[in-house]
Length: 165
Image 1 (tube, rainbow, N blue to C red):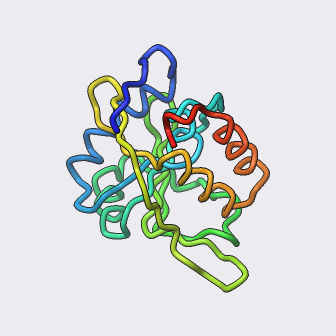
Image 2: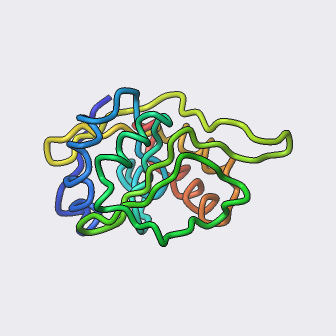
Image 3: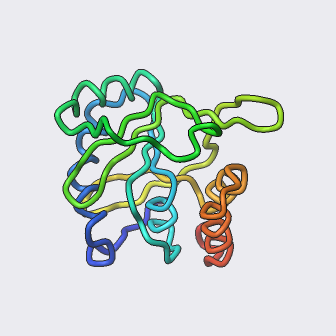
């Protein structure tokens, strides 16, 4: 499924998407997907987007870190570091920061486990293909993350039309 997202509905995070997407397509050798608030917004949830979270492989995270070195925000410390680990880096882009998580893992009852995205959809953002998890996948991942902000996003996604499911 490929949907088109209206440009005027995105403001600052649209600027970051347009700046980052070409490099994601150019430098990532493995599949990548946008997750978090931006993915929820692209799926139609009315959520605020504070940054762009990109889930990649470790090797692609390393490639992006090398390519975007001049943009890297080395002072940023991610929240919930005790529950999440990855080849992480935050980059300063026009509009909003972009956070890359290579090989993201979540610490749960049984220890560390990789965060895997099953079914994805592609949305068109100003002519650029952006991969996001399906609404059902986003809900599953957000509920697994379990933080209050994630559970709130999951509830908003559950209220969306069935056309995305």
